[in-house]
Length: 208
Picture 1: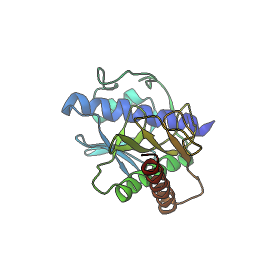
Picture 2: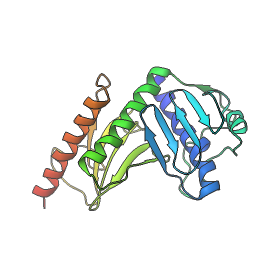
Picture 3: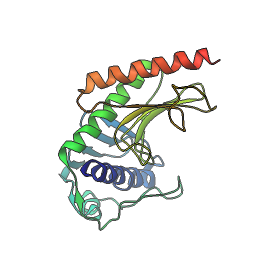
């Protein structure tokens, strides 16, 4: 499936081409979402569409990621010692990024970041490379949007209370999940996610 392959590659790029070099330079793995991609918060490395952009340069996300890292002047690899590295993107892998899949991922994650700021105005959404999701935690509840994973292939919004909940709304092992509609533009997606978060907060309040 082209989407899954692109999602896994972009997650690996986030982990080993941006978060890893940034962690070694500045001690943080945090990334931020942008309308057409994502960026390091402390290092001038970013993905825009299907390009890797760095200070004074850039290149298409093609060929081998290790060679892209060398062109950008950084050491390729994930942030060792921060979390368990489960599915690293090999430096000598050959990238094959599908533009439509990349656009959906970027649109979904950006809509998630925007929705989090709408639903939780005091929050500071972070794109985490480990799971490739943009999320915040509030009052022992995780709120986020994932680009997809082994549990659900395509982008989804989620709410994960630290304490397990029961009932039909809580439809995932970690809490509740809302699949995102790939036909919706970024504003519609953000509205969908905000409505889902508000419904979840009502359920959390009703459950005590």
